[in-house]
Amino acid sequence: MTQINSSQTGAEQPARPVGMDAILRIEGMEPDLPPRGAGRREMPPEDAQAPRSKTALPTYYWLIAWGLVVVVLLVSFGLGGADMEFPTTVSRTEVETDNGGTLVLEKTVRELVGGAIDDGVDWITVEISWFFDGLSSAVAYALVTIEDVLKWIPWPAVVAALAVLAYAVGRWRMVGFTLFALLFVGFMDLWDNTIDTIALMVVAVVISVGVGLPLGVLAARNRVADNLMRPILDGMQTMPSFVYLLPGLLFFGLGKPAGIFATLIYAVPPVIRLTNLGIRQVSVEAVEAAHAFGTTPFQLLMKVQIPMALPTIMAGINQTTMMALAMVTIASMVAAGGLGDNVLRALQKNQPGNGAIAGLAIVFLAIIIDRLTQSVAQEQEDRRSAG
Image (cartoon, rainbow, N blue to C red; front, side, top):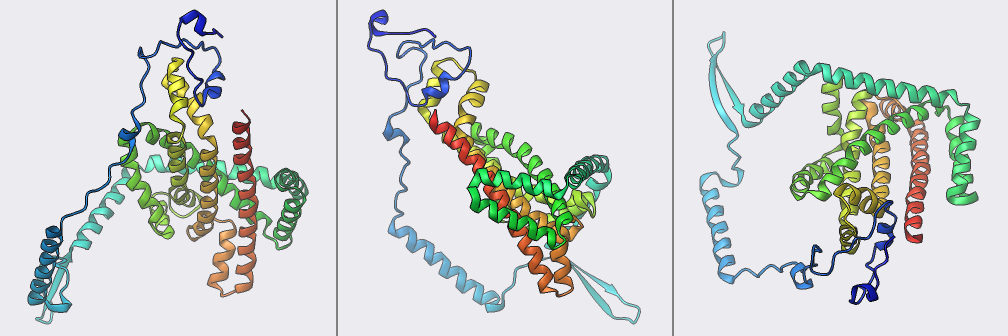
């Protein structure tokens, strides 16, 4: 690697910027640094980066605004009183009945909007059914393959393998908890349903990460994309979880693909948000140093930004995994199977004992998966901190 010293350039050698260690790991690159002021972007002053404070509204604004509110209140009481309703009726039709009476049929705004949505969904399910059928077949094949592989492995081998991983994560305390949890699941005759739940969760997490990571990178590098995604992600995270079952049921019908689709919508926002956040939090000095070395945008992303943002990205994957497990359980309402079936049957038959046992199995599975994924994220953080 070429050395640039003060005796050769006749100028004082600049200080090594923070994050240079990440840049030096880029193979096959030479630090062809241009002189100061030529081809290097200057950092804006701190005052330019400080957020602007909002100016206080004048007093007359509040007087006028609240005066208008009082006027609207008085007019509303004059027109309709306290029982004033929204004008939701769009059309009103009178139809004569057989006995000589009159029947009034009203069409509301909600009925018009709901009808338009129903027509759109009907068109999609008919005209693009080939796409949903192919996607459903691919998801079903992946699920069956994972289930067959996991059920082919004898349960003692699975328990032993997870115990080894648990020792690496939390030593003997975690090993003891893992053994107790897995044996509890097995002796309660929930092993097969647990395998089904794991298969559903694995497929949902793989698809969520495959979709979420590129979208998170796009949002981090494009402000317009970030502004477009933010309200959509807000809606996906605030909508009640049962609502996600409806589009999956409409497009895929009853079964596991519908549960996977609902889980995907529910679980993908954390990985998108935290990937976006992690890349944006990469130090400006590291990015500037990478530009000084002449990196391409792809090299900057793959060898600087993603490695430095990996702990945050792993935290997003951890949250996506936990949310996928929660939604997979609810997806039993559309015949997705797994431990959610045991909980649903217990609710339908009023069996609190069976419901509590299945619920404990889900909790134990969530704790084990959470500890394992957190250990991977912590290991990545330790490696980055070590150099």
